[in-house]
Structures are given as structure tokens and as C-alpha cells.
Image 1 (cartoon, rainbow over the protein chains, first blue to last red):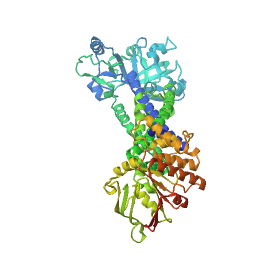
Image 2 (image 1 turned 45 degrees about the vertical axis):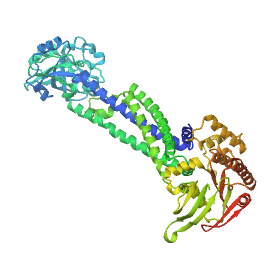
Image 3 (image 1 turned 135 degrees about the horizontal axis):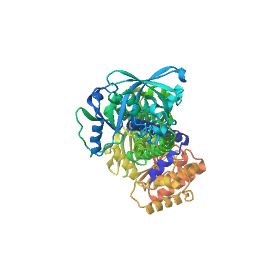
Image 4 (image 1 turned 180 degrees about the horizontal axis):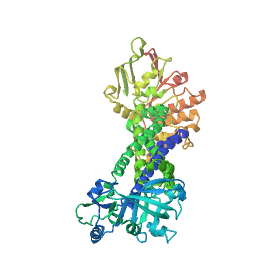
Length: 410
Length: 227
């Protein structure tokens, strides 16, 4: 087809201009793919952090505990075994968790870098048998201990605090626990081990303590601040169970409305990116198309003189725009995919930003890894190709409105 | 009568700045003519040529092609008329630079429903007639001015138009090349019976014309017939 031949060859009529335009289009596409991968990576990581440790996919809580999340609840799940049995009879597995808010107190005289206290969440569990999904390979605390004789009276903290506090195994530490009744109890112990995890929630907000030891010393069995059952795997829709009052099953979205709000914002983020992409593409190609048309007023007039219909001439520029868009999209996808590969396998280290800004209010890690998806590639490529083709088609009107004689003499 | 022009008026601008390019032109053209519109610059010969080719509009009067009035034609009809019945030869050749010689000629008939073989045969016949059969794959930038004008002539003729309008076709050529081009057009006029109407103030072109229409200040001053 002669019109395609003309369109293709016209792309290389002014190589410099075509290259600049292709670069602009390619850069826009690559930017969109990078941002999409980054945001999806953040979303995925946040959900993973929530579901592997914080709230799991769902929790069984009392209504009062749900309404007063983060504060002591007197309507806690006290009969954990009974609830656990209901869950097991439904063919599901949930982890029993006892949680309290505590102040961790440490002294420079004991070897720490400074005197101070840290408000943290302490989770009481069976150090030997209870596996923690957030830790590497879902290990137990026992597997993190280096001093097997001391772990019974110890606490486990993250490597993050080991670095900042100068903590070492064996150092004495005190937990001031606020119980469900509002009373304060002191639990003395030593640092039994440090765990390692990429989960920022675990790193900065949580310490672990062995339940049996704490319960026997402090008689905490009925005084733990928060008792719940957490599901660390999705609950199939086919599995149902009935819970006694006042207990209900809450999803992680219900427990973390802030996360849901941010996720909703993320759904709208594409509009911002699209506007940015659209703007750059329009600016990038409009100059090229307009200059090409202005340079070819005489040529277009010649075609009109020879009886070429306006639609034929418009299609000539349509194909030119389409080819420009396809080439630009290919370049952008290649660049974007290379950046994406880096994002997926290496990630973007935002530790400085995350640490200084309290995780940005979002349960993410310090290294964000990208996520690959075909959909954004197909979407942005299609959009770019469509925009350049349509823009080229419509802009030709400028030349077609001119007098043939005036254009022939231009 | 192939083309008839009656009381044609064309004005550029308005009021005191108005320029009367054509003032009541009456003239007819027959088949197989080889006619020159001659006159000094600004006499209206190019304007008349453009109006004959529906490239420009006029203010009063009418032009008819075999009794089909231009006044009754819409823009699309004019495009179709140009495609089916007209060929143009321009002073600056106006070839498409990204196309080869062969493709430039083929462009003129790309919308015709001819078979590939017929198209090929027609183009090669014309290239032989204009002496460029060995230049089929060359781009216009690889040709001399005279060669480019030959390609333009072939392009104008390939669709077998009834009428070819040539605006200063030899203006950018040297004398020798101009003569060659003129000889070629005379030959094609005789072989193909296509009407040629020129707008020129080149005396060389006027010397070979069978009819010369002299114009001055937008009017026809005289018509010179030659046998």
C-alpha cells in the first residue's frame, strides 16, 4: 500500500525530530510503567505485611475489641480454646495470639547506647512451637535464639533495635505492661535473641516474649490486653462457622481502614499518571506533527491537486502517527521493562524516607520491589498509539483548510 | 466543446486594495489543443489556469466541462473531477521526495481500480516515452531538473486525463532542457490527443503553441490561432 510506504518513509524524513519525538513518547511510557510497578509493589508489600503478621487475612475479635483497637478491651476473647475449636471444626487454621501494649525500659548502665523507653506491642507466644509467618521462612522464636538456656525468660527484638539501641543478647531489659484492667505490671527479662524480617511492622513495633514464662510469673493468663485468633491464610468462601456473641470475624480491610483509604487513593492515582502521560505525549508529538504538516503544505496541496480526497490525505498522516506511536511505545516498553526488572530483582531502597517518616503511615518495607503485569503495558501502549494516530489525523485539518493555490506557492 | 468559460470574474482583496485578476473572461477549449495563456506578470493567466483546474474559486461567471458546470460542483465533486479528468505540471515539479520515480507516477493512479499489471504497463510505457525507463528506482533528489519535470509529465499523463494544465513548466529549466520538455509534450499531445493548456511568459513555449491567448490586466486581448 503506497500510503503506508509514504507514511513509513516520512518518519525518517527528519531523523532528528523523529528521534526526539520517539524518545519523548518512550520516556512517558517508561515512566508510567515504572510508577505503576512501584505503586503495585508497595500495595503488594503492604498487603503482605498485613496478612503475614499484623492482622492476617482476618481476625476473630470481640466487637468491643474491634471498636477500641489499640486500647485495652474487657470483652476480649477469653475462651480462646473454645473459639479455636469452632474454627478447627470448620476445617480452618487460626493462630492464637495474646497481645499487650508495653513500654520497653533500658538503661545505659546495662550496656545500651542510652537510657530510655520504647512503646511497643508485645506478643506472647509459645517460643518453641508457634511459627511466625513474618520471620524468615516462618520460623519459631526458638530458632532465632542463640542462648537456649536463657530463652525461657527472654524477649526477642528485631535487628533494627539491636542497631539503634546497641542491644546484645543477655542484656537485661524490663517490660512495663498495661493490662486489660488498666493496671501496670513489670516483667524483667533478658534479651534472648534478635529476629530478622523485611516486615517493617514487625521490625519497629513488635517484640516477642514466651507465653508460658510470662503467664507463670505474672499470672497474665487473664490479664493479657488483647486475645484473638488470626487467620494467616485466606478463608475460602465455602468455609463457614458461627461464632458466639460478642465475637465476630473481621477482615484485614475492616481492621485497617487507613490502608483501605490509601488503597482507594491508589486506584485514582492512575488518573494523575495518565494526565501526566497524556500531557507529555501531546506536547511531544504535537510539535512534530505540526512541523511535519507545515513543512508539507505544498506536498499536501499537490496531492489535492491530483484529486486525492481529504480522507486519503488524513489517513496518510494517521498512519504516520500510528507508526510513530508504535515505535515510541516499543521503545518505552523496552526501557520500562528494563527498569522494572531492576525494580523486581533489586528494588528501590527508600529506607531513609521510611524511617524518618514512620513508614509514611503505610505498612511497607524499606526496600520496595516492583510488580510485573501485562495489563499496564498493553494499556499504556494502546493509549499512546491511539493518541498519536488520532492527533495526527485531526491536525491535518490545518492543511486541508488552506487554499490549494496558497499552499502550492508556500 | 470540452471547456467553456463564460464571463469569469475573480477579485483578490476588498475595497481599495482589491485586485481584479479576471474581468469577464470568455473563452473555449477543444480537445487535443496545445494552447498557451500568455502575458506579462499579473495579467491573470495563472489565475485563469487555477480556475480551470478547480484549484481556485471565482466570483462570477461559470466554467463548464462538457456541459457540466463548475458552479454545480461541491468540493468533493471538484476533487473527483481533478482525479478523473485533470493532470497538472508545476513549475517546481512537486514530486513526492520519499517516493521513487515509479512510485510518484503510480501515486496519481493509486485510487483507480486497475490491476497491478495494467498499472505497471502504463507506467513503464510512459517512462519509455519520456526517456526515463532506467530511472525507475531513483528518488527525485537523484534526478536533474529536466528529469524531474519528465517524471511530472508522466505523472500527469498516466491517468489518461482529458486535460493537462501546466503552470510555467519550463521556468526552472535551461533552454536546452526546456526545448526537450516542450518537444516531449508536443509529441504526447499528438499521440494521446490530450489537451495541454500552458500558463507561461516563456517565448519558447509560445513559439510551439497552436493557439496563443494573450492576456493583459485580467482580460483577453487577442487570440492567435496557428495551423
